[in-house]
Image (tube, rainbow, N blue to C red; front, side):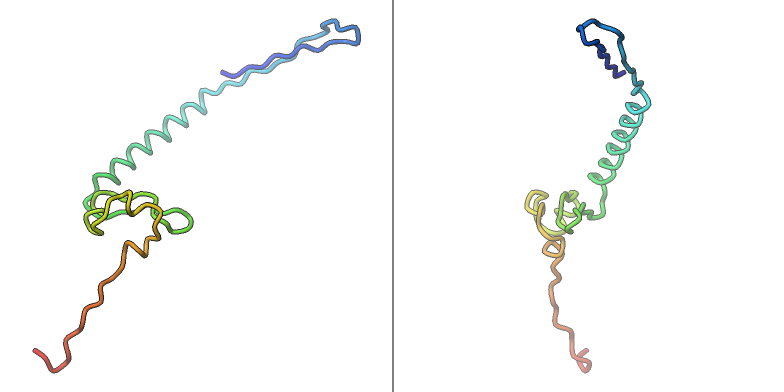
Length: 102
């Protein structure tokens, strides 16, 4: 609950009226609680996933990496953080066998 009250005074500095408002923020608090619960569920899926997952920002830089990603890329989440995701996902070039080779 948020409330605000102000007094209105005349030219002789006498209180002439009181104005105020009250805002019920319980619906907002419920939405925030639901949002936090969703974040906890997502975080749990992210952390415990057996597939490698990266969270990227708008500039495609790594914000976070789960354990599977760290294992795949051989780096800690801290080492991956703030680096471009392409740096994490470097491919190793392999020499392809010639067509005549068995």
